[in-house]
View 1 (cartoon, rainbow over the protein chains, first blue to last red):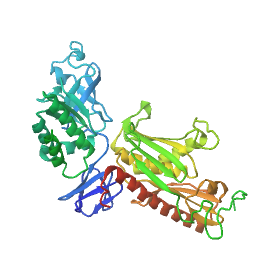
View 2 (view 1 turned 90 degrees about the vertical axis):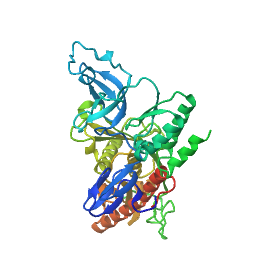
View 3 (view 1 turned 30 degrees about the horizontal axis):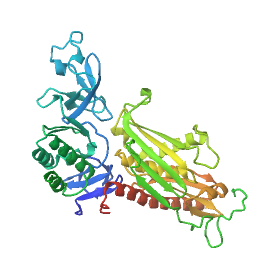
View 4 (view 1 turned 135 degrees about the horizontal axis):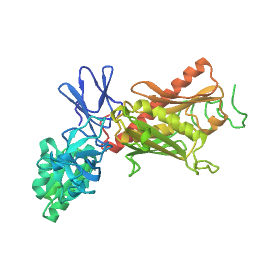
Length: 224
Length: 245
């Protein structure tokens, strides 16, 4: 972490000056690029960004999230997606185009407390984020263990091109669904594998800022 | 000019203050980030004999709903002194002084926060003074700023605060309780070090033009010292191996 491309920063730190494009979690003050969160700054090509080490989940369109149904109106469900905004799942998304508010009962498909894997369709901050479950791999989650980690650590858990999560899945035979909002569902037939996968996830959460974490996780998974 | 009669020697002939400090020496400052589990962000500060905890929640839904703003997020702040924070029991109900300090702290923190990223939400800052000594509003701002950074709320800069004042016709850094009571002036300043902007400036007492200039410079120097301690608190929590700064 010593090279000058990556650096630990806290809010207000000047990352660089010059003709760079401000990307995530940075702001421009004149020609200085300033970090706005605690994290690791990265300068790649022409853009500067900070990977946050803390913070709440902010919905982004096309993110996969795991949410809990909290209530419904006659037209849509409200889903807690572990953010400051609630996800809105329109009924037509589940019932199809011939949905009619008086004939179809929303609670017959998804009840309060159900967990769903969903994708954010649209979010512009003026309205609550719109989500969908109409896709393969999305929809109601029937079984598995739910784990909550800090949303800022999700990228670390996934790893570069999914390397970290593949390592865990291969070693434990578990199926892991990661929501970008920090909720994770782990299901595994073998109870030992399940425990191990959970332990690995917790380990990554605790040591997210450490270097060569993949090797450490591998070592842990291989040990009995 | 100003100042109450007192037998206390605030500044002796060697330039040593009533608690043994030099003129430009701050009190001992210790900050720890992330001390509360249930808050999104938190910090504990010991600033001389001040002991203050700050907890931050949010961004989250605004209740009551009518307070929310569709264009930007809002910040709410509560500064509260525990009944046991002072020598005589303090009534826990918010006093006029606490309401005012809540307001000035809110306004000192607001310029640093990028709340426009979270419309219709609120960031709540709760500050609990466990033990009060002079300069608790500055210490509260320091703790709140670390707690906000700990919560991961986007900020343009940290806010650090420190007071300066005048006792025995001398400008001093970091006014303690005795100096505040018996001194001639007290000037709390909150400051964003990287943007070089002042977000809070209060003055109780009378200063000449030159004294005023010296006082604010002294206070800003104090703020910069505090900033290093805030930075250390955050570095210690998030980058265990010490960071690279």
